[in-house]
Amino acid sequence: MTARPHPSVTVDGLVSIDGKLVAIRRRNDPFRGAPALPGGFVELGETTVAAVVREVREETGLETKVVRLVGVFSDPGRDPRGHTVTIAYSLERIGGNLEAGSDASDIVLIDPDDPPRMAFDHNEIVRAWHGR
Image (cartoon, rainbow, N blue to C red; front, top):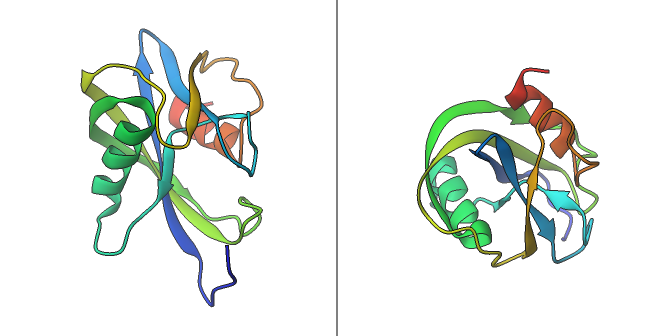
């Protein structure tokens, strides 16, 4: 990632299936192999809501709709590639089948009460979503 005079905007999606949180295992650096929430960069001309639905579909195979905003996470050190601001959304599954794609090497269903160490600041995002 090249240095920019402003932060990049990303999105992260939180989808629960049978009480488990859908996560991916990252295919690429940074945090290759670590569990992460599905998400990614917002494309030019795209809303954050459209971006999170697209990213979740590309990485997990799930069709979703946004239920609520979880929060905005903007710690300048949250991504080692450069300053990113992420907007996290809670989503509801409306179709599709779980299948790793795009930047995901695998799908991981995690216990939101006891999540493993996750990439970026995703543990903080899970806590905000889960109310802990």
